[in-house]
Each structure stands twice: as C-alpha cells, then as structure tokens.
Image 1 (cartoon, rainbow, N blue to C red):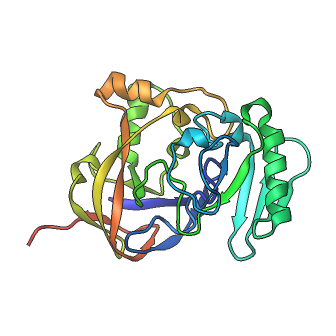
Image 2: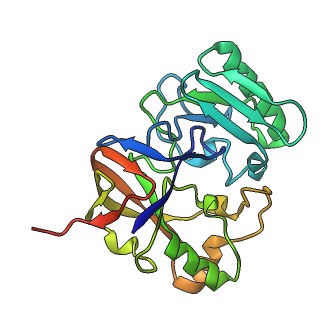
Length: 253
C-alpha cells in the first residue's frame, strides 16, 4: 500500500490541513493533530489539565454539522488561527494570548447559537490530544475499502468525511483490517495496528456543504455487517513519513 494523503486537524472538529510529509514520534499522535478543542460550557474538565472526554463534550461534527461551513487554518509558527465564515468578516486570532482565545470563544459561541451549551471554551492540549479515543495513535484508511463502501452505497464519499491522518492506496479491500495486531513500516516509522475505527454520525456530514447527505455507518452495517472503516496504529519507532511512501507489514523473523 502507498501513502496518498496526509492530514492533521489542529482544532478538533474543524478544517483538515494537508501535509507533504510528517515526522512521527514514538508513543505520540501526529504532531499538531487535535491539539486544540472547543469545549462546551458544561464539559466536566479542568482547562489547565485536560483529560480524555467523549466528543459530546466538545463542538464537533457529530453534533454540530454547521462547523463544516467554516474554513480554518492554523499557523504553528505564529500560533495564529484563521476562521473564515460563509458570510461576514474572517477572524484571525493569536491563540497564545487571552484576547485571542476570548475572540475565538465569542466568535464560535455566536456561530453555533443554540447548539452552544453556554460559552464555548478554547482548550490547548499541551501534551494532550483531543482525539476520539484516549490512546495516542495515528489513523489510517484504505482507499480501496472506501471504494468498496462507495460501490455498496452507490454514492461518492469525500474521504475527508472520515478525518484520517493517512489515506493509503493499493492492496486488497479491507487490507488494513488484515494488518490488525501486526507491526508495519509506514515510511521510516514502525507502527503497530491495534484497533479498527468505529464510525459515527460525524461521517454523515458532507465536508463541502455541511449537509447530512449520507449515512456511512448504516451503509457499512447493511453491506458488510460492521460499522468500521480504517484502523488506529500506535507509533513504536518514530520516523519520517511522506506522500508516496509505502505501508508494509513487517515479516516475522
């Protein structure tokens, strides 16, 4: 299998950012992946010491499809986040300053309206990643498996509905599932595939239109008897991964 696309999602639930390459570190998520999140006011967490919580505690596509209407970009060098709404002026805010964080919270609380359960709180992980599972992993999707789902459902599905870190081509349909409990080389990094990814309502949202115009979990269940697409992999040894690199199982000695 071959790496076709690499993405990070700096703020949970918001725009993906394409990468040509990335250096993975052992025991870590993709750098700058889900390092920020907008927590609902009633989320039971300490902003200074964030811990894993279910996605329902945050602004997220599963509950807030309108977030897909926002086009955002994060500049790690300046710690600046740009938010472009479908109408009106964009917001550019320095997340390292209290004023910048407050501006983001006000902007997005107003944008979500009744879907915001009070004033949203912008959180920074500082070693914590606001992923959907508590374990630090990277996510991989086989484009062959996605094509099988498209054929079964009769509908084109933007791969970004599934918000993976790595999209790979080649191999057999569900070939990524066959790697479960195996070690693999992804570029120059060594990983262990340990979990299939269970899909949720976030995948119903068209990332271009913000409409709930498909139901991948239902179609997966109907055609294949499960609601899984893609796998999670733990980084055992870090290294550079670039578009075009191979994903290969490590043969036992």
